[in-house]
Image 1 (tube, helix red, strand yellow):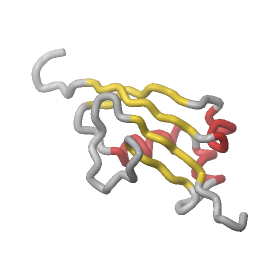
Image 2 (cartoon, rainbow, N blue to C red):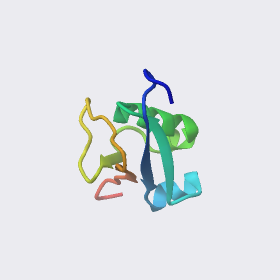
Image 3 (cartoon, rainbow, N blue to C red):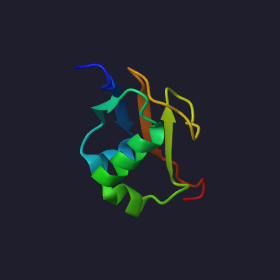
Image 4 (cartoon, one colour):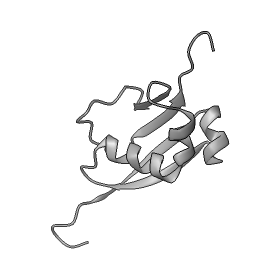
Length: 92
């Protein structure tokens, strides 16, 4: 790549057993541009699998980046592990 183009980074997205029913996979590798914010990836996943957003509204869908909840300014890095999971109420 020439100068001025962002570098590509590979991250892994992992889905829990609930989300696997929608995505059809336990994990997938995703290539993002260097400096991509986590919330860009979140938006991309929800666009790719709209049933996730329909079935699991905010507060039910959880996610971590390398085991930690992302902040508003979390930027993805090479090799990050992003986990998407359904957080069901205790008395579900």
